[in-house]
Length: 545
Image 1 (cartoon, rainbow, N blue to C red):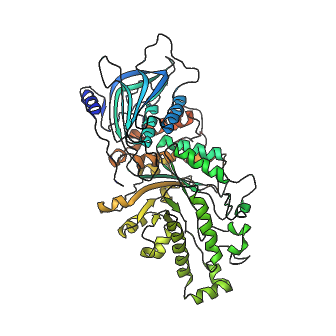
Image 2: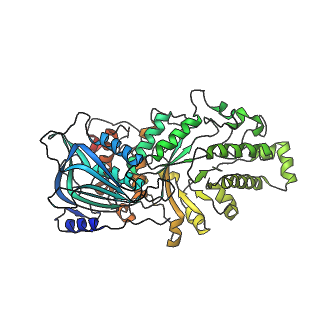
Image 3: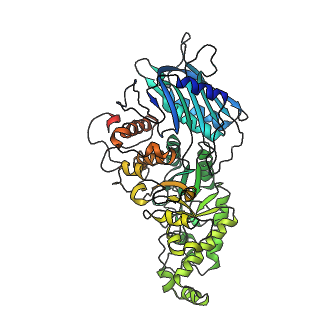
């Protein structure tokens, strides 16, 4: 979907004209670099960088009794109202309150949303405009105003506003530096994802919510929930209640109500939840409750392609999950399928002969049949790249190909008319602790796609948090801050992130954002350690680690 453009109001034009008269220290996307912990810094410490912005040299004071003035047809939106309360708690100290004689430059945040449609779909308009200036007598462009076409654009604007608000320990007040600000912003890619694996290690609900919360700070917008795998099946499926017998323990499970809760929590932050059921491989856990899904007791993967029962279970799982997950895309896996069990099990081998299929043909048959089940439920199927590598144009044309093995598959997929998501394991796999933040930042989703008409088929990208060696004790510091490096690549314009001297132009801002995550309760690891998620190697400032 092409990006939506905010209509430029007279309000915006006047404000832009005033800012053009300022002797601003930075215009467009140029950034001056200074020490990131300086209150008088002239640098732009926003993450991710907005598409367009101008700023000045003034310092504004923000009232700790900041109020919300929500205008437009969405003036009763609970999504915006609740978000404002969350951000106010992040911005201000719990003990802060306005003095009776205090005169603040910003005492009200005006938010104007032009649509009351809160449907969350891929490509929903996330654009916003932010004005932030000093009150002046008779001016119509003073104070703080966010304009957006949807509530989800307003959420992105609130995040940017919150990052501009800095607590000054000398004055014990929240201030905005380098004002006045004028920001027009929208994402580069519609799909900006983070995959979370809860099969290899169970993650409690509160941990998943913490990840979602941190995603909203980086403007990531898709949680790819890899709920189930061969090691465990922690999700409740009402149609087949024995499936979650394969959870590690009864305490390490997700009830249907838990899944609804996660989806609702994410939606209030403008984040989709894309669930995954990986078939026909990676499904050994299914047979713990229903052994007939295995080809035999000694050959437990992939699922038995020869039985109608296998597809009845898949259909019921997806039907139950469709009630929970409204996002239009569903991940069907399809990767790392070893078909030896089909070849070496008598009844499956007989079925193959009867249907004149090789094991490779049966693999394609299984993937296509699972895709059709998803499509019949009004889902767009997503499959890992092996399905494209093996079947190519035989895949359903609606298929979204999900890259992971390395570079090169997305150019081939879009050439054949398929949509694609980039997750190259060499640069965007978070469990690879030796991948530095610089590689996350410099990876380009459109690399190798020379036909600009095909660019629109790349929906975006996703960083992947496989959990073989991560659980509640270390998952956050494994994800953050490196995931934020990819988040800026997916949100900000290409020309803003195509920089040559990362240490001068990006690193100070990235370290600053890592400290912001820490201050917001997110256990983001030091930026510059050779291996990710390691603690600091010695004493020092958060802003320099």
